[in-house]
Length: 488
Image (tube, rainbow, N blue to C red; front, side):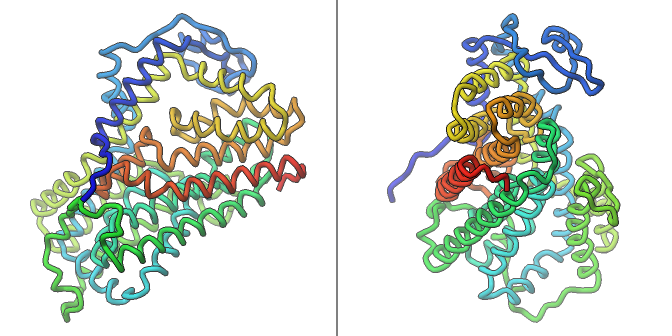
């Protein structure tokens, strides 16, 4: 069998990117923007740097600063600093893994999967389509991203035992949520922040984003379903064929599938609580108040509260399952062990941003981007801006972080040359969303790949058709808006 090019391990890829970014701090000039704080006070780049002031950059205020190149010790410290910075996400992943360990120990997952497989036999395509739209809906409404990692242990056993490969699971979860974030309709973490800095309503451009969201999600669902059907008919057609990927649940006997064994009352209660916890997790992080929904209370939970929640649910599941404290703790620890590498890679990826910020080249890259788009006409401006956001999104994988950096610069610039700010918002959302589907600097992408045991290059190859179609759709959409002047 012909062997393709194999990339290094996920951690090695991230270290390579860190070294590359560190080298850029020796090549690119350091710089910064004046910062406008929440109370309207403007601080010079030096003041903002010395006092650690956060806020939005002031357009046209970029200044060259003394360079601060990142050396050997900065690079080797960056992963640790990144893990410290992303500790909330990492603990969340560990707590989810622990909960799954306890539930698995009760046998509820195995029997539940067996029952679901019997009911969904021959209907997997429908399941793929429904789940893809659900994850995409989470991405487009409240920026569902890191928390999707919690769903892989749920869906992997179902799809693998049904005859599909892990790429199908990544296509549904990662592909669905990433497309939702890319064509975000009202996500407060991308559209909301960007619209706020641009000084326009969240509803400006919402019709166009809704149309694009539906078309892009539909394509991903159809593409993933088609690939799944092809793999099911002929496993040699899988992009992962020959890699000998194994999961712990694959080594267990599957006698429960189609057997007469039924879930006990304890197992039904455990499984019900387990599934309900993920529904509640989704509810708890949706900012209903920001979306104008007043009849549902906004809990405002994030990774700290969610981690505590899953820890408590894990303990309760152990009690319901009839375990003593030793069995519960051992099962929880084993579950955490299974997702440890995922928790680590999310933190390590954050180290890339730390190197850029400490090396003072983030503002320089942004200023370079402004220099490219400023002299362009409307049609070129909006499309070049879209691709610039793709590039910038590689280095700043946080959608809210990139919006904070770019919108105070690009929105006034667009207004000066007579372009509707809503078009700038859409170019930003589509651009940063596109790169976040495949960026190796993204902890979610690499963490998902590790959980599914999918080499990064295989995920990239799998997503190429999706990327091409989305780029074509986005360019046509943005060009249509500029040519017609219709801010849909």
